[in-house]
Amino acid sequence: MSKIIDLRSDTVTEPTEKMREAMFKATVGDDVYEDDPTIKELEKYAATMVGKEAAIFVPSGTFGNQLAIFTHCKRGDEVILGEDCHIVAHEVGAAAVIAGVQLRALETKRGKMDVSKVTSIIRSEQEDIHFPGTSLICLENAYSNGSVVDLEYMKSIYNIAEKRNLKVHLDGARLFNAATYLQVDAKDIVKYCDSVMFCLSKGLCSPIGSILAGSKEFIEKARKKRKLMGGGLRQGGFLAAAGLISLKEMTGRLSEDHHNARYLASRLEEISGITVDKDNLDINMVFFKIENCNKSSNELCDAFLSKGIKTNPPEAGKMRFVTHYWVNKEDIDYVVNVMKELI
Ligand SMILES: *Cc1c(COP(=O)(O)O)cnc(C)c1O
Figure: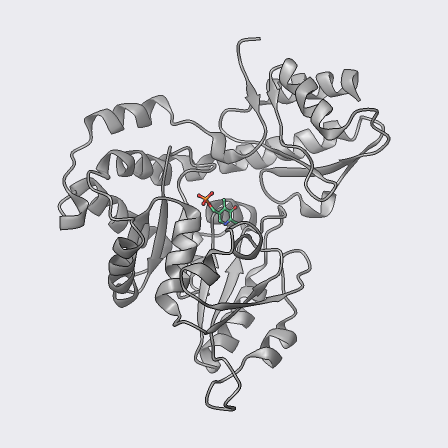
């Protein structure tokens, strides 16, 4: 088995040949002195692409989300967000450690909180000596469960926030997947938030890096806090060179990954005992359950690996397969055939 088919995530995507060449030849400088022209070019291009005044390169999506919270809020502030969003579920409690905020996590349905519930729990510290002040709402689109949130919902949350003088941060790790699904420009999503983070390193194939974008004033503040967090990168232009290719050439092809995910889902349904979560099939992720499998999840992952397929064990009873640049239709057919033998 020469080729490994890695379905664990789109974070596994290695840079393309073109990215490797661009990185090799990149013009660089010390970005802490704001001397790296390639980083500057990426930040400018990224800001324009999402319709914000400014942007800053950060090492990871988690870093970008936490930097946003740290920049928008003061210690003890309250942040409203979905209970199963990435910031709550997969960022190691960082918001408590770095920004020192309290997370007010609400139940979600297909990635959406109840709008009237959000409105009713906003608190003002002036109102009562006991109250923390709510200063931020965090949205996520595409949502980690594989669904895309509609613009009407984002707009209603943004309007509430504006009225109550709160900021909205969008965790858009897969912003361009959401835009692809909604068939809109990324700007049409980002207009309903004050700041947005999106990853270059997932389906867009860059080796490392994410962008945080917002107003000029916000990004200036964030630049200082990024330094505090140890994210002042020196010759970061090597990474930005790949990032520019991500934004210019890789966003337009995400529909292929979405198409492949739907193809994978339909083929998985051929296998008895597999139930695909068809309600959350908007982007490049397929969630499914395997009933009556005679193998433990570890045995199953090992069996896949022996056939050249990398998978994660199920989380909360569900398997997740992710399609990306390095997985094609033939690979999917191979995976389905292996599964028919194994399950
Ligand atoms: C992957 C992801 C992140 C974090 O990105 P890392 O680069 O892995 O830190 C944040 N939010 C969502 C929704 C993600 O899927």
